[in-house]
Every structure is written in C-alpha cells, then in structure tokens.
Length: 184
Length: 162
Image 1: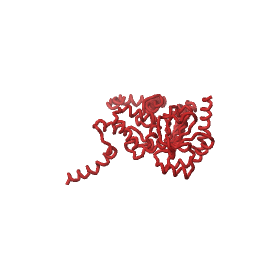
Image 2: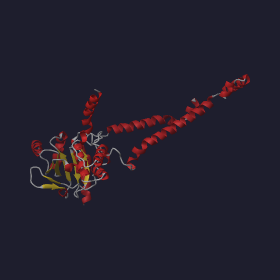
Image 3: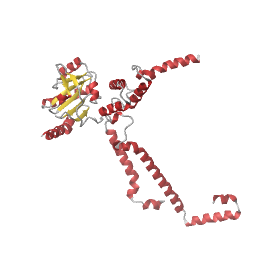
Image 4: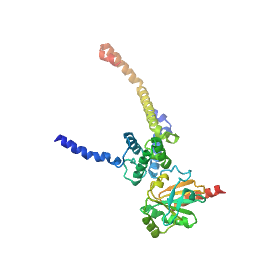
C-alpha cells in the first residue's frame, strides 16, 4: 500500500485538497454576493409605458418624456431610509447637469413634499406612483432604485439600493460616456 | 366531549388556512386553484424566501391583487407567469426554466452524484487489487498449506470457504 502512494505524482496526491480549496473559494465568493441584487430583465429594453401625475405641479409625465436625453429615474419615498443616504449623491448628479427625475413610489403626496422640503429637491420633476401600480411594470420591488435611460428611451442600467460614489465612478460615468459616443 | 374538542380545533385552524385568499372572491373553483398555485409558485422579491402567497410585504399584496385582477380578465396561467418574468426576471419563479444559464442548476446535482459513484467504484476496485497484491509469497504459501490441510482433514467447512 505504501508503494502505491509513493507511485502517485504529488499533484495527484494534492488533488482532493485542491478540489476542496476550489469549493471553499466558490462558496466564499457566494457568501459575498448580495441576494437582493436581482438583475432586471428590463435592462436593454424600452422604458415601460406609463402616464403619471406630477407632484406639486400640474401636468403628467409619460415614458415619451424620458426620451431626448440621458435620464436618471430615481425611485424614492419618504418612508425609505436608504433614500436619505443617497440623497447627496443624487443631488450632486443633478447639479452636474444630468436630468434626474423622481419616481415617488407608494408614498403620500404631502409626505413626499415635506421630505423634499426637508432634504432639498434634486429632481426636475417628480412623478407620483401612489399605489405602486406603475412600479410593478418597472419591476420595482423596493426603494431606492435608479434606472439609467438613454436618449432613445431604452433602459441601460438599474441600480438597486442607494447610488454612491463607487457606483457613479465605476458604472454610471462610463455608461454615460458610452451612450454619448453611441449618439455621435 | 371529543366532538366539541374537534370542532374547537377545526375552528381554530380555519383562519390560518383561509387567510391569504379570504379577501378574494372567485368565479370558479378552478380560478381559485389557479390563484393559489400561482401565488405559491412566485417568489416575493422583498422577502426572498417566501412565496407571494405567504408574504405580508406590501409588494406581495400588490402582486396578489395583480394576479387576481388578471385572472378576472380571463388571462391564462402562462400569460400571468410571463407578466411576472418580463418585469422581475426568472428569479420570481420558484421553478426556474431549463435553459443554458440554468443547466448547472438542473444537472449539477445529478452530475455530482454520478461523479461520486464513479470515484467510489474506482476506490473500491483499487482497494480490492491492493488487498490481493499485499499478500507476500510467504503468506500465499501459508494459505495454500492451510487449505490443503483442511482438505486432508475432510472438513466441509474448509471446502465451503474455498
């Protein structure tokens, strides 16, 4: 039996350990993934059709209005704590000249208005989805969520959870550049 | 007494069972069955280890309403599932479809089991060979001697073991 073992190459003897190591690496990687980040099937597709009333303004917002420029559609609500966390980043994007539209999800008009008064309003307009019916068409399942929509009205990315500096520099800015280069 | 106990228990159990559908009125038993089937097969994205039938999340309630509404409009099971997948992706399905991306999910366990059998059989074969080879010439001589000894003594037990 001892001869048998010595005949095996060192690689073969280490094989079980290597397989075990790979398995550990795979599971460790899996642990680090966030199960809440469900890729949206809407990325690459036209923005779902909708018509919604505006907050604090007359008129309506529809999917047609999203065309013409790169738009951030930011799903927020006054009851959403993480929305406060991203508020500064959203404001910064809005100040930098990006079109940022608010999507007030399952909220009350007066609560949303008070929230915007308190923290500041970074949005060009705010569409009200009081019952969340349009949110379902957009595959919204929480707030905050942010959609990046190109000038043709195609959804190019969906951010689940707060927008932060890392997302802006690693994902959003390269994507905006890519869309701009496609335009010309 | 027993009957009363039984009735009390039955009454206590009913709300638990009926709660998710209590607020919906169905035109037919089939429609209700389909509603229950769908809401148990679709995952609630807010509380991911629950079906939308079990979840108290706001979104799960909205989606139950949505399914109910679509059933009232006479939509088929496939149409409703399609509606959900278009919006939320395959992840809403507790029963994921078979496609190249999900092959590992579907065939992985069977493959791992077969690979396990393969290695077990190989190890067993190897050990058998090793056990035979392990006997030294001296031992084989001794075994033969013992066997012939047993035969000479005419014992049946010795023959049986041969």
